[in-house]
Image (cartoon, rainbow, N blue to C red; front, side, top):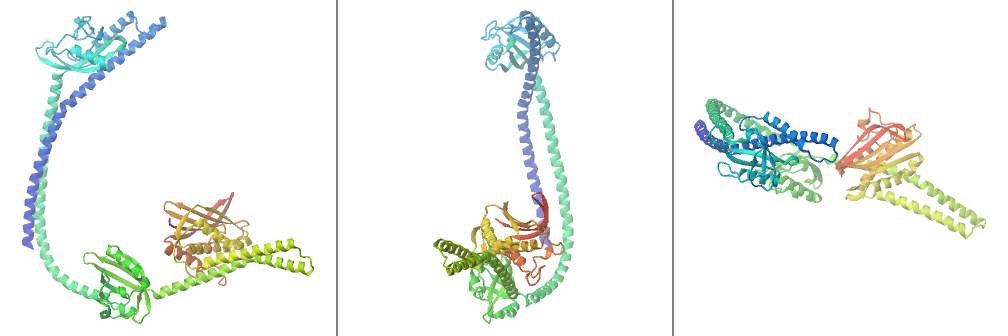
Length: 629
């Protein structure tokens, strides 16, 4: 191990040195390429910058000219409203002011602004007059020709005039000999037309000046590049040296650690044996079922919990397939769970029934996960047979309580139609006994009896549908279920003078309709019982249903004064009730929560809510159901 460590460290140092050298080479090469690109673009960049300065200088001059021109024109219009351009007198004034302005704004002998007046835009010998030229004052007033060439033979006046005619402005270059020297250089110029006076206004800068600037900038870039290259190599060298030093320090420490680990390994081997022994003891605990199987369901290892819970000894089921023990009706969902485990998902809670050795079935709650690298399932199961039986008893009690509520509702629903039938029948007998039974009275009375009988039949059908067991999800509208529920309880609401206010969106869901109806009846009955005790003259129940993002929100709220804060957290517990034991079982809200949480995969909560309705403030309980749309 120590020899391998030495080889690894020295190999790492050699690798790092090679990478360092390659890195330095590539970085220097990149920096040189970058420098070349910067040098290549520097001249164009500086030239463009000076072009903008030339253009800005001419534009500022034109703004100044235009200001004086407009002032003179305005004064001239006071004398004559028909003058659209300057007269000869004001033109001379403008020229005088501009000559003074340009003479006073000469930057140097090679940097000034000049003005030519165009006589003939087509060019020729006398196409323009040199109006103002601070560098050639003696030649002002002389004519210019487009045939005039610079030292190199370029017709720069013609080039400038063509650009003015086409674009009203132009950048152009020409050669000239600088004053008091024999040096010939190129000059970059910019000219622009001022149409009011037919003036071409221009300025320029010798390119030898630009070349000097460019040369200085290039020299600066080269110095920066050399400094960066030096710093890059220097600091990386320091980092490399530190890294190698750290490797040697680590080598020394690792050697010490290896020596200590050799001693610890002996201790760990002893502890590992103890852990394996303890694990075997834990695995063999008979409280729960433990299982190790492959993805096909073949049992590889079990604990003694199998014998205690299902009656099988280990040698009776190892190397068999656990699907042979699963209840036939649970095979399909067990296969789905096996598929999820094979795909790498953890199984947190899964119920199915396993066959006991005596032929009965036990309900087991499984948790399992897998190790993909060895293709094995590790599962544990809890025997929840008794819990399921208890839950079934609570469900049946809930159903019986609901039957009691519905029986009371039936008696209220039937009271009026039975009274109508009884009165109608008595009327017929009386009319017959006194021989006063005419056809019209007979027909009307029989129609009343028929309508009442039909009402009784519809009521029975509504209640029959409520109690029809259905374990299949169906598509239904929430508004339809609310209407059906209110039809079942409306007579008892009418007897208590309770007004129901609905605000229900058009929402269609796929779920267990009768179970949702049962939840609504439980909540509405609780609200009715609370309002029956209320001192409020006006009694209201509000039902709201709407979508919020991906959730469906269903609310039932009353103005019955609310629930005591000391018990509000207990109302969903089984057998908890504030009613007399003769009229309350304490399982209605418990079953409602079970239905919403387990079957609708949602939640139900309650709170005391203060609200305003028709300018009056009320306090009541607000139940909120929320589940996925």
